[in-house]
Amino acid sequence: MIIHGDCIEELSKMDSESVDCIITSPPYWKGFAYEAYFNSYAQYIRWSKKWLAECKRVLKPTGTLWLNVINDSEVSTRAFELLNIATEELMYKLHDTVIWYRFNQQPCNSNRQLTNQVEYVFMLRHTSAGVELNKEAAYNQNPTIFKTKNVGNVWEIPFNQGDKVSKNDFGRKETKSQYGHSGFPTALVETCMLLSTKEDDVILDCFAGTGTVGLVAKRHKRNYIMIEKDQSYYNLITERLFPSTPEIEVDIVEADKAGCSKCSRKKRIKS
Ligand SMILES: C[S@@+](CC[C@H](N)C(=O)[O-])C[C@H]1O[C@@H](n2cnc3c(N)ncnc32)[C@H](O)[C@@H]1O
Image (cartoon, rainbow, N blue to C red):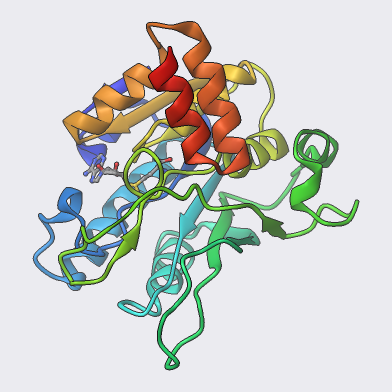
């Protein structure tokens, strides 16, 4: 199911304990057009608490929330502040912390800072009891991201690079994915999903963006609920999940896996 609407409003309509897994990446308060309605960082933090609380309500007692957040030079503690809200205020249990190593990140052109190649994926649950991660399925699907056969918590996955555009209202150039803002790479979503869910489970992304969670869920025979506020991203999700030319879907998934925007574009132009 793809829902065009505001996450808090739409989450509030959902039944409690109705989803098995949430894989999501919220707006980061970076000045993108789609988050211009925040007047301040304090307001962003208050809003974050509301949607994190709704996610906890709709998540089954055995469910998992994979929360992807980044720290950067604008807000160097954002990821930790959201984690603090989740664990200290909302009583989620932090079960694991994954480092997404984005080795191909746009280099930092200043000698003042290092290139930021790290994003966090926090694995949050109601309780840590009774967890059975399917490491074999995750490894077999994407063996190269782990570097060794030991399924660890550092995942080397390329960022889906696209054109560099000056879209950030704070004056910084941002690297966009081939579809717009930083879309999830397929391998990241697939690893979270295969570790913590099984066929027919219900997976939610309340900030669906480019719709990668739904695309991967469909591919692995899971059900999906995606909420997206922005009309153009909603349209893009519909196009990605229900393409008029079926080969486009396969092409997009493969292009995502390679972290390659150009092969996707070329094939789309041809078709
Ligand atoms: C960081 S992006 C998520 C990208 C996504 N993980 C992907 O794979 O493309 C955040 C998304 O949340 C959407 N968004 C922002 N505020 C929202 C809200 N209140 N309700 C629902 N979606 C919202 C934005 O339009 C944007 O597409």
